[in-house]
Length: 200
Image (cartoon, rainbow, N blue to C red; front, side):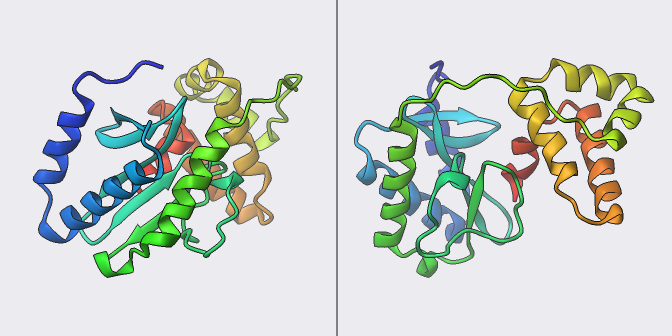
């Protein structure tokens, strides 16, 4: 796994230049991640701190009024303490938002980190690659947008499947059209779905 050179120094700089409330939260999260796994690898991607084992496990980003902690395989986690935010609907990732350091329950968060690293350590099952069921709405939209179509076709199978499923899962036509508009915008800008939600 390729890691950004001087990632830890970049994370230090990132945290040191945050406002006091978010700096305190990020420092605490970083400490708890290392307490949970002494072999954790620090990385720097998408201009935010990322923490890896054999692959990306979690990362955090500071915003004006909160800090978002993202688990990249959060959909496979139990969410035992119901900490995951309801307003991020990515297929695989899950997010916990902190507005104040007092919201961090260390024991609970360590449990989440332990579970996340445990999931990452599980051997990946080999599966037969299936064809993606691309919704007709998306097919028609891609036919009329060369840039979006090219970016979609060049994406990995997982990312294409994620976008197709995002539209297919919408129950109302109005919701499908709203999602389609966002998907086409993302594809025009070559944005993968997990990148869309990393700022949640």
